[in-house]
Length: 209
Image: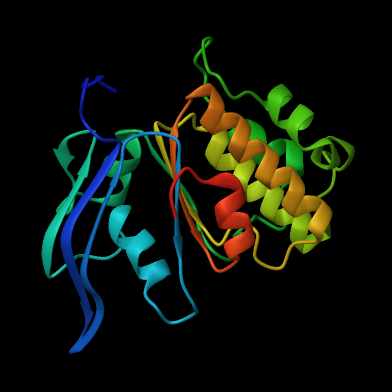
């Protein structure tokens, strides 16, 4: 991905998204330069729709979405992913028959200089290391979420979109996710947009809410 000095990692201008005649997103604008930005809201407020629109799974009626200065609102999801955008969707979506280790190695970057490797994932989430030979269907909800987050990190994105990353997780696992987000933001490895209902998590990990 070509570096564009001075360009925000993500810029959204006056975004409008519809489902039929239902106006799901009404004039949203935001700028994410670096670090972590959280968007907080109740269920039904359009948070997941915002995520899906950023990554190309939903088309906006109007407005602009720029990633690293490039307009992406008309691009396909795989094209946006190739620009360095990672996505942790709500609902985990792991393969039931693949082991933890297989999940990770299938998605890991082959770059020698990659910041995120399978080994680093196991250091960050020790529970995944303990469960590396277990299939996706054998994992708890919290373990599945750690795996979903890890898959996105292993693509070493420049911009990471996370939809409700701590939903339904035990407090101990929420703490691990919070520490990971704070560490990544501090080291400047990627910009992260976090969609959250939990205001405590949002304020703990974000530069702005």
